[in-house]
Image 1 (tube, rainbow, N blue to C red):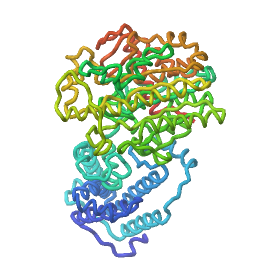
Image 2: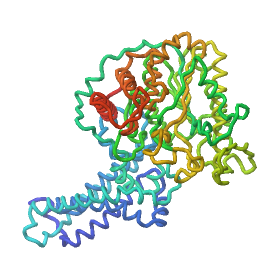
Image 3: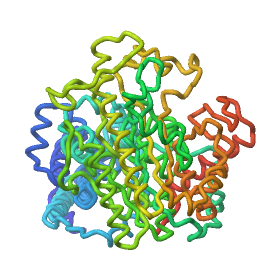
Image 4: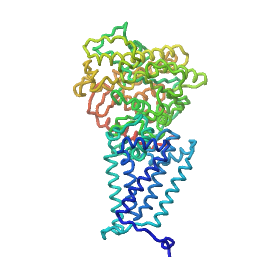
Length: 629
């Protein structure tokens, strides 16, 4: 006689099993939420104010419990299994938040190898008390399963394995359908009130881990390119060397919303009141290259431009759906920082914002930055309104440059500024701040006039930062190349309000513009001080880039051009390929292209199409498969 047969057992009718599954799902949901680092009472307070969150968090757990109840014919065995799986995932989320300030995403299941290797690199404090409670709860549920079982399903044909499998499959089908519809809804997700919508860990804590985890199944997608072959892509990763480049410091500054909007005919600036004198001076400097960089987004998406410039991939090509490039990064990547790091450079990233924003702290580590410095690590901050000034960041770069020189290091740095971030309202720099007038040749509303005054004040400060850095590096004997550009055009009101008032082509549909990509173009300048110009043989190196006459480039080619300009052709097959593609199509923006003869087109040759296809496949390989130690 079996041990379990010695004890009386309770048989639950099918409806009893269903009720038990619902109740147990609620308990498992509470336990999973309790496993999180934030207080359970805080989560429940959010749920009380937004009751739909209770259903959204419990529903997937309930469907999982129902699926295994059908399969095992025992609601308590099912609950034990689901409790263990869900709570282990919740504990993993807690640990990941504590060591990397990033939640667990569904895509992490594809990275188990990386997770295993990463375990040894972090000082992980396992919540043994929480783990013990979860294990104990699962054991109790399993024991209850020995004493309680479900009655056969009332329909005779469904009492065997066919019924079990169909019931399980139906539950999973409903769950899948909900994940692809209800849980995939960004409108629903964004409708819930949270303390900080941009801080993903906080959102997970406040909306509930089960709901947020299910929502992430359909966010930040990467589409597999047609015809992708992993072995083929791997074969392209050959022929790299190190140490071929010229020894020059590389300082890259991406300035928030920096543009040459004020060069438009709608403005009446003169040489005496020009808000961009330093940019204009460098456009005529014999040791400078200037033009426009075509960035991935309009009036936003700062991190996407960082991704494009540093990796040479394109945010807009990752998926047919809108995505955030930094959110798809979860492994070490090739980047401009890695190329210079392989040559012994000290690589760094500076940003006077929070390290969690866009997950920058983790992403820059994956892109090879040895040092990252965010606002909480900066001292004696200088603010203009609520943002750290561009002038402060210029001084910070200078201090870090001197530190590198004192240590005998060459510096490769990427800095993203923040001062000219929107919104451009009158109180941006304080209620009593007086903005210089903006001379215009057109009549605009007071609302637009205010936006322009506030924005131009920030652009003026950005240009002053450029001038300060040029003056500083001009005075050093160290060879320095400075690259300076804007991350995107400014946001000037809904429906391009400010641009329409200026009669700018930016406010027109693409097909009605003389420049179809004008809403994505920001100015860039690459300048070398005298020492760097001599080391690089500037005229020869600049001419060898074979830039189009208007010097326009996709953001994805800007970093590659810097790699080549500093003599590093041959160090990276990836960046060599990008420079080859750049010579064919200097600008690729979705299905619009700029050819080397400065012609915009949507039709390219079959050979160029093959290069674009290789670019997409290679990018996918790097994001999903390439191992970098």
